[in-house]
Length: 263
Ligand code: APR
Image (cartoon, rainbow, N blue to C red; front, side, top):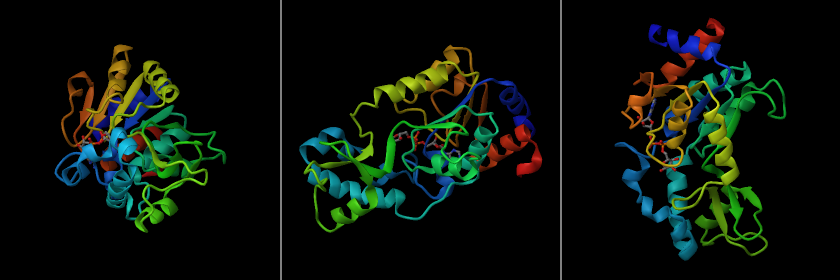
């Protein structure tokens, strides 16, 4: 893709590149997006998944959460070529971090697939800003556990599901109205504030505070490139906008940066 030539050169020459990703990067893996005609918020009411509802009606919250979780993550899914392209760019030292709003765990899976060092010390750092839907966390003792067995208990009628300590489990994700972990968001702000290139991929860039990250990057002099199917409120700030499928754009970008050995 000739249109990627300039961006691939900019990325190759940059000292720090950070990607901000959203649901669109996982869409080719079969995970639904939130917005748009097939988005989950067309089928579910966002208002049922607030932190306030969780606190006041945890049983009702969990009944709805089970349905949402099955609709989003019920089918087996795998990282797709776009996740893999970012993972390989990270492994090759061309991508400092992936800041993701996704809770599907696919960036970590892709990174682990290509890691040359076992303990996750190589490759791009992955910051899961909104948590991970495959875990739950006890609201009393903070113990984390796999979500699947807990979801089965919810399906069997345990609502709300409880930890051994008696505390109520919460999905280990940031709910509407809940604050992002401050240190994690601070780290994300630092990363975008010091990067030369910010790649915003598969995100509508309308949900704060994540949507503010590309603005911080641009304010600090970074090049912003956006890859989504739909327009975003930040398109005017971007040097490059690719209105194409992530599985076309990112592997092509990776091939231009690393050479054709990966395609
Ligand atoms: N290739 C490129 N872009 C895509 C693709 C694709 N195959 N499929 C979808 N997109 C783009 C859409 O054009 C849209 O811009 O991905 C974006 C998806 O937007 P959203 O559904 O709003 O997802 P996201 O930005 O991650 O949502 C942010 O909203 O409800 C909350 O907590 C939820 O983390 C989520 C947050």
